[in-house]
Image (cartoon, rainbow, N blue to C red):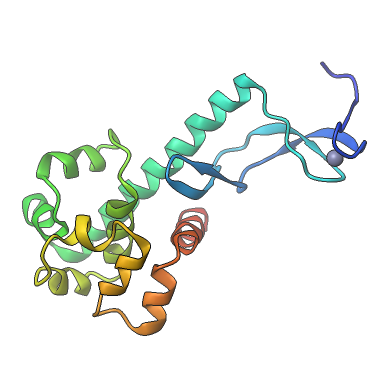
Length: 178
Ligand SMILES: [Zn+2]
């Protein structure tokens, strides 16, 4: 187990490295960061990671935790900044109060559309008011990247930024790591 291992890809030396801060695909989120210290065998030359089934299970737990904690953090900010009750907030986002409360409690993984909507409005609660005038909200307006263009109240550059899925996740990464 502790014997020096050679990388089957490039022949470089494989060493255990801390992967905290590295990002991975997890469910429908494309760049989810690992927020805890976790050591994996990594090739020091080509960077190939060697993930056995046990490590994959741990990684899955870490990534889920990153998504759940980001969701909780965005909702905490959103509640604090908007000063809305849970019921009003659920109505404004366009989701049920039960679903909102399970997200706040970290019991459910949000869909990408709901996640993105929560993230955008947590950064700018003024958008909540404008969203009230739109029908369907989360389901209609944030489910597909191209649909983001329908957020007419966003500036052109914001529309550009928010219509890229990877940008959402980069923003997530920056906000919860720093
Ligand atoms: Zn290698």
